[in-house]
Length: 263
Figure 1 (cartoon, rainbow, N blue to C red):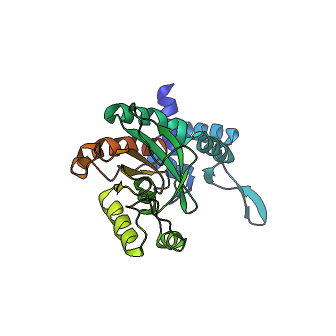
Figure 2: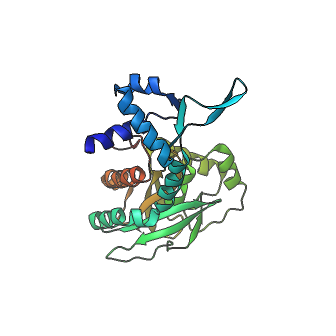
Figure 3: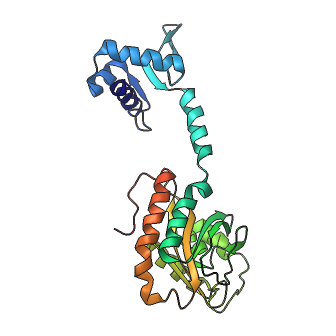
């Protein structure tokens, strides 16, 4: 039974954007499955709506096409799968492990228009005053967690953010175009953002990007604490753990490429 299921799944994975339709003889050649067996697969898949075989005009008559396409049932299942991926519940176990590893606050943020929105937070066992809390916003140009998302956006999106009025939240908040461009370029090139007193005086944050199934960055994860806990010379000691966590979350979101930073 498991071999039969495996064969069926392998047939379905042949349908791609580059080749969305297949004939029986093409599938037989590609899979080395005998045509009678393959025809039974195709008949069952078609009856279940997993595949479809549309009617076409031929000689003034409607006849069944000899090409098979993915069917409506897969659209339905795909939508259910996409809706069932809830980033918070997916990320929380990873965030807890990260908090236990470093004993620092761990934050999850999502891009919302020109802001970053904090949607989950795991507190440190030694709580400190931080700007962040669930439901709070920060502009995409300020704070490591927001800015690492901005680092992976289009130039149009960056310009949209820069055209907004900028606020000086703390002594380290970048406010000029030059400062912000330099920081977002650093983030994309190095795979992380580092902020010192940008949203709250005396606090430091390190953030890394999370990639979704479309290979885009709309989420990020960060660790944060007071400046004595996250000095710049110790950043490398935190990055591998952050990247590994972001890689795991990205993979669960459907990101199919190797995570581009870290080992």
